[in-house]
Image 1 (cartoon, rainbow, N blue to C red):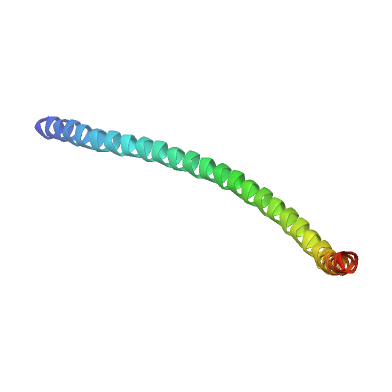
Image 2 (spheres, rainbow, N blue to C red):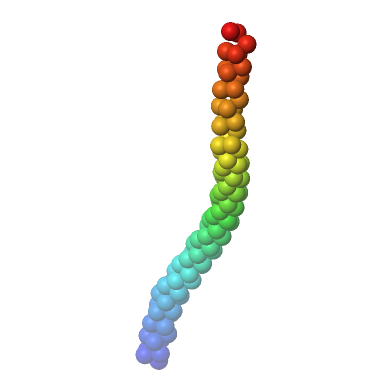
Length: 101
């Protein structure tokens, strides 16, 4: 009987110790799961922010391309208008000199 009581006492001590360790491990697992969920939420939020920024960059590039096209168009028109204006002013000066003599 004495051995049985000793085994029962040892069982209670080990059960208590292992029960505390098991609870600590379960608590740690729960904490890590929460931390992992927070990390996943952070990753999803940042992915959303990246998508928004990529969209804004694409819109900005489209606007820049439109401005470049307009600039090139105006530059092309200026290439043809400038010589015409020069010719007109040369002709105008010629007429002024002709009529002022």
